[in-house]
Image (cartoon, rainbow, N blue to C red; front, side, top):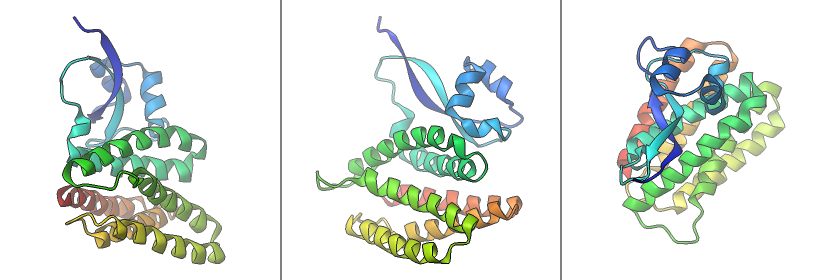
Length: 217
């Protein structure tokens, strides 16, 4: 019999679930749940929200959720949402939120490599993380209302889109990635203006765009 190992898996919150009910259902401690999902320290879980859960799984051929590419891309959207929320409201938790996002980025690369060929020396993870850092930088620009920083930001964004262009990702549309970036910026503006309902509607658009990206590879 193979040993059980602990690994992180995706859990999607069901309607009317609470932190306590999720812990009981998934047999995890509240400390571990909050450690892997720091956004739960300041917000309640809501239906459809993906959470990182420690799971004791047999070391078998059981397929990981990481191989389900549409889920991987959607999870990126939700993890980015957590990261932006942390950056705005609880900046001390940004690093903790960034760790599961980094792990998911590796899963995204596996999905892309499965469907298309990339040069061996092409660091796609770096481009994805530059994309994330670009979004976080926008939080600081909105917060400080720094016009000089905004000019520099636009140039770095243009360079980032150029990097995506150079990937030559077949059907993947660079314009779609650019549109996602613009929606993240709008989401940040609405969140920082306390227009949470409008922000959630924008996030719904982002979620659909991530779904479309997963279909384009």
